[in-house]
Length: 259
Image (cartoon, rainbow, N blue to C red; front, side, top):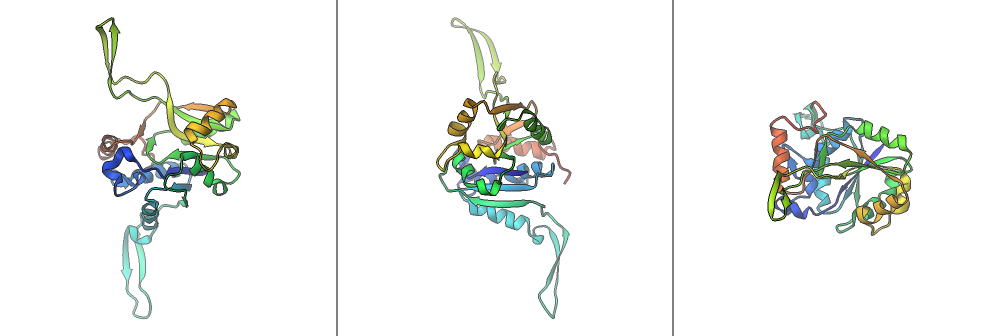
């Protein structure tokens, strides 16, 4: 199964970092958030990715070209007086990933980016996510759930805390105060499973969230997989700091790999 990752946005709410690099390359601990995301998929043998590039996409290409090179880890260089030297990896950091880098435009909407990679996805079920979200979602369970209901699309539904204190009022008197409570409803958690027929709903200039998904809902083809574990979206510098602290303290819930 291929995994499409939307990597093309400009990350304007994280401008502190994204002036010089694209948001997917903003580091959480020692590695870009995109690496963390792909690593979590690959742990479940989901090793085939289609990256929809846009803003500073060349830097994302360069990162992976370096990551997949023998020289990205520890290596020995052996000179050869009769020919070129040889590189012997001692501790490789390479990943066994199959990655398609798709240049989908600087200002293209999310649905338009998806529309452009139709031929790369092929006629099979595929997953899609954004490059700025991390979670401890049981991906095999998500895929199994999708296959069980027979619909066109599955969205992961998560709950999020409100970033402010909520007041309960009795007239002008405050009868209750709840600091950053959990939102009553569910929001789009960004981890999707789609059947290839989703491309019948896309177009070059469409938005996935405003155009495509409402039409899928209207046709009764979108089902929610409720995730009650860890979920976080790196929208701001504060979010980046919080995720990095989780990693540094050894408490990163999304880490489902050993090395």
